Length: 220
Image (tube, rainbow, N blue to C red; front, side, top):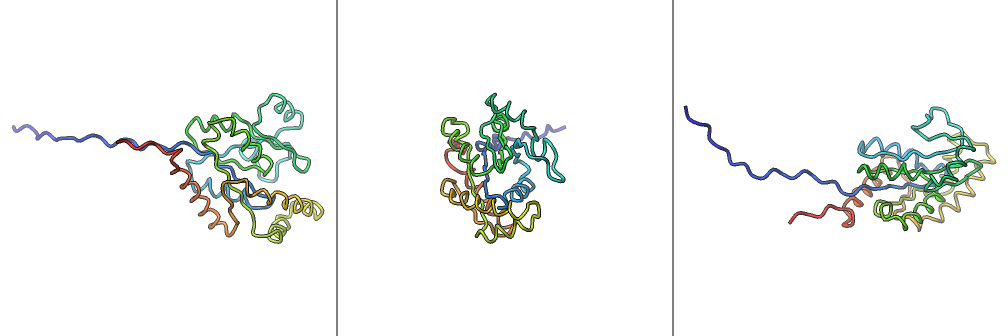
């Protein structure tokens, strides 16, 4: 019986190496559409995980603790502030919000891209902290999402039907101050339709993945 012909096997293709993980920070004025965009982005990219923010505000209908937010009472939130657990925290319209440092770093160190939804004040704090922490600075990409005008934002807030008229006016006044901070972000995304916002956001991520500072060095 003839022996089977030996096959010459070449080198196995190298496993595809991942680029360094991203910390994708999206900020917007209240009612600007960042929560919708984040939901769309997470559905479109299963490899992306979200950073869960802590808050003292009560859950809205359908929101779940540990999924949408970590809902804390004021005393527990204060205790965690004093312990230095938050990388950023702020009080907006009487409610406190904060991002746990461990929430970000544990996921980045596991090689996961992390999506972070924060207000403008929180974004400024994270940018500042990242300057002192190379691990965060290398990963951070900041995007400011805003409607094309205050009139469009007012329309969205009214349609949401969750706030009184006086509260909406307060939010609009605050939004003007927030929108003025767009220059401090890496990208400005003027909101259009949901599909178009998602398309442009995905393009931003792909571009950032190819930056030389994050890319895997090619084998020579």
